[in-house]
Image 1 (cartoon, rainbow, N blue to C red):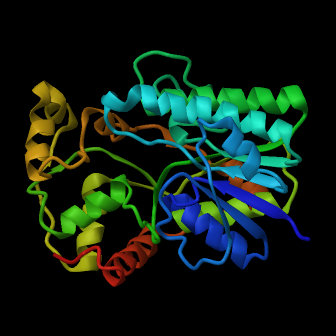
Image 2 (image 1 turned 180 degrees about the vertical axis):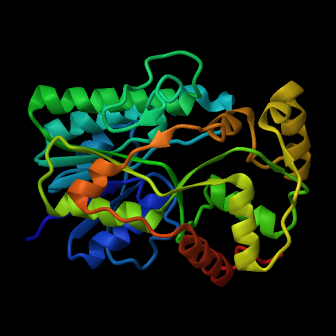
Length: 330
């Protein structure tokens, strides 16, 4: 029969890439999607529709599945969606664990986030760093921390085979529903940004994330947790690299983040630029760009022999993919 791997959030950026990599590696894949099928047409795997808030849909979708990779999550850069984020990311994870208990699933790989760690109180982030316990953190960060604790408790309480992974900011090809960073680069290419913001983050190639996730499928690392990180670049450095690869001029001026946060000016300014579309730089997303922690992925390197793709290679491939798929037109 072969091992059957179910991927939640299969039409997301990670999900689409992960489904393709699993199929390439010889696994039978069941792609679990909510609404969108973008990026999965003709990919050659079984597809099941689920709602993580509907327990029955999860139980039905997991029948005959050996391994579950839970990537489904709601990511938001605005506070207005806070309650929905918690519902999907926390209650949805609880529902999935309950469905796993009712079926014959043998292993879970849970996608947490580097944002689940208490980055305000630790200078260096490792897999053993404390998780967020409350306080003034973005809703997404708090939801991922809470869900991670639930998964850890499930693993300990049921002696279940679980791996948890913590990717940094994911970037790369097959970004069919352009991500936060994908939308930023597309808009930059089209000249929508007269200025940038200071700050930066660690960027990891989506192909690295899925490659090493498949290693967790292939071998037994029960109970282990791994950080998937890449390279830290400021917004300006990332924009300059994008400009170099795509042969465009990028803005030179950078707003200080503190200035950008004051009085809602920045939000209103960019909202007018995007004509009512979801904003890219909001107070929530600006908090992420204040990241100053050192991310230590030495455990991942040692155990999984992890190597990240150089960020320039990622940007080159992403530019080619966006161009080939028509995202840079108009």
